[in-house]
Length: 136
Image (cartoon, rainbow, N blue to C red; front, side, top):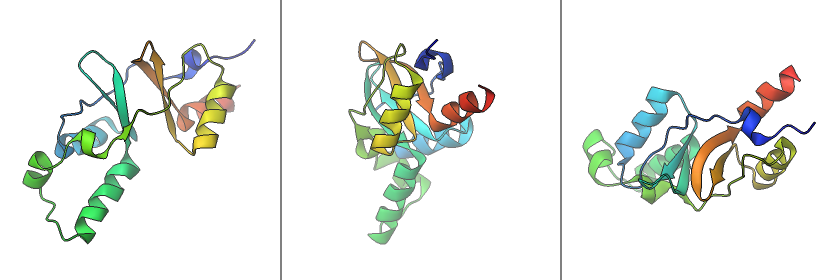
């Protein structure tokens, strides 16, 4: 029997709103110990995704440009919408984990939002794949 994404995905997904400031985004990563943060409108419609690497690259770019990066700047100058990958590739929960692996490998992604009707219902990561494959 084919294993579906629903069987291995994380269902309780921490999400940001497009208007969350960069300081809040960094706090989400630290507090919840996550590597990927979907960005959703109030109705759970997925509009983007941010990885820890996206934040590091953005902050490094700002530093190279000579911008001061203190808490106040991060609170008022940048939002999740400024650094997110817009319209990320999604997968449906009834797709196979093989399909999820193909998408992750092809796109060189580490995480894949799981959506139904444009709304986020979960997230599947390479870590989820390793957990599943190591106990199969």
